[in-house]
Image 1 (spheres, one colour):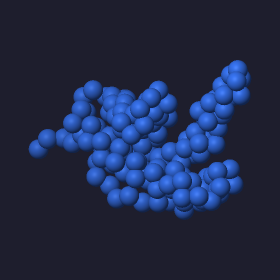
Image 2 (cartoon, helix red, strand yellow):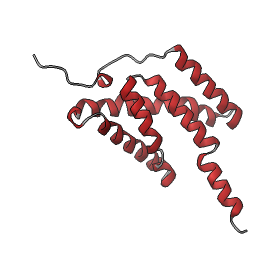
Image 3 (cartoon, one colour):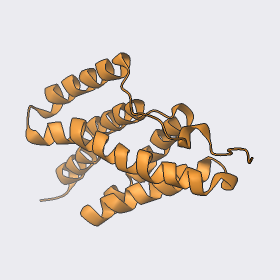
Image 4 (spheres, one colour):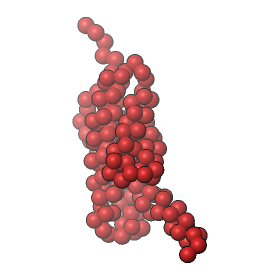
Length: 150
């Protein structure tokens, strides 16, 4: 009988939401509603997108890479998933800001690799989205426009 060398985070497991995770997600959502307003865009960016994208990229791609590439170490699937995440955003919205989404995908992937749970990843993703849409490139762009000669 052969020994299972699949990393613990890549083994099949049920998706579960811990009450603290849910409570923190509500806090992030509340902050988003306060900062961005109660719009469909806010709900999509803070609730729907993080969960859907984490299901696809963590439960789907990162888990598959961890199973297929166990000898390359845990960081390789995290890095490849982050690159794929950036590429997916670049396909939908070409440009450097879309590729920049690969950067926060790295710590999200590391959290998933360590904890093997989806809820903390979706929460972290929602928090990154809140920062991104409340400030991030929007503030940088606004500053550039304000400083440019008319």
